[in-house]
Amino acid sequence: MLVGHGMSTWFTRLEIGNNRVSTLSAILRRQQFLVRSLGGSPGQNFLAKMNAVEADSLSIIRKITPKLDLSRHKGQAGKIAVIGGCREYTGAPYFAAISALKIRDASLNGLYVHFLTQGADLSHVFCTKDAAPIIKSYSPELIVHPILEESYSVRDEDKILTASKILAEVNKWMTRFDCLVVGPGLGRDPFLLDCVSDIIRTARHLNIPLVIDGDGLFLVTNNLELVSGYPLAVLTPNVNEYQRLVQRVLNCEVNNQEPSAELRSLVKGIGGVTVLRKGKSDLICDGAEGTELALVMSARLASLVLRGAVVGRVIYFLAGNVAVFIAWARQCITRGEDMGTNPMNPTVLGCVAGSALLRKAASATFENKRRSTLTTDIIEYLGNSLEDISPSV
Image 1 (tube, helix red, strand yellow):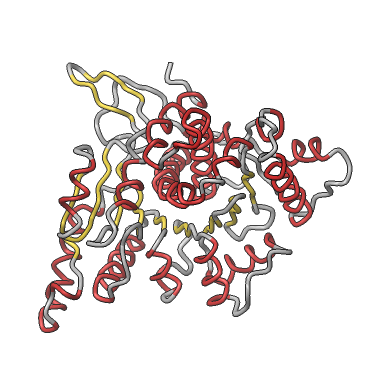
Image 2 (cartoon, helix red, strand yellow; image 1 turned 90 degrees about the vertical axis):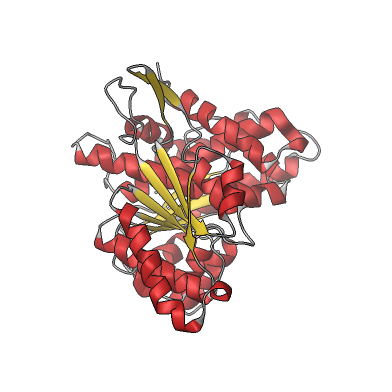
């Protein structure tokens, strides 16, 4: 099944200029290719065909977004943790964590005002000691835990004891979290990756959803048993990360002629996970028949692709978005709410909602900032975009 993000601006609101005609043509060809690869036929009335197979991702966001409730207290809207951040990389964990907070719906609770942020009232970052002061300086809203260690700071004879202390400290918080984002800015230090492997195993034991991104995918690709058979795990590979996964699991190169079939084979090869393949069109699959989804790029976001470096950093927001919506979807399903979707897989719902929201926010950012768009500019449009989709009043 092909899923668009429900925005009518795919074709109708693009400003056609000399530099944009080729971009639009490329998008149309890509969409036609996706329809063919997912079992459709773009030859007759292409737009009608797209509408016939389109699942309304915006309606999913509306269904799983919590309503404002004066009786809520801090933490009920979700608690997200990011495992990542080392001395070289501090931006990625910040973007992932702040995206879980930045979509704000204010509600009054007695004399206090707290925020039902994008699925997360609280957003934690577990990082190395070197990264902590920098990440703290980005925002006082984040709860930063400087407990991870890299090999250079730990003597060989102390590694076992240090690893056990790190895991014990994380375990103090683990049961409070509704979802973990593992990997943004994590780096590839062997000792650090071993510690994070133990954290992943603990999260699985506690049935906590995992969104694996960035260097977390490097870890998982080389240790598939960490996520194999775990239905609450989501992998969010970019082009290169996806290629490495395909080579590792399917022992072949990426087949762009049959992306749906290949993605389904990859998911089944890993076993029981959901994969969100990031790109101009985000492909989503949990291995179940008929659940291959594709969220197609909006026309305005296509212009932002021209700023390749910006787009490359935009994806840091996606992991935080997906984590939040997974937490919300699980809450809805636990309450027995009618989601109007089949199957009711919270990881798929979270991927669809997170991808659609980020694309809308990125498009809105470019609409206002144009050539001067920076990754940080998108932060302020996340909340506005959610408000447009699911008004707070």
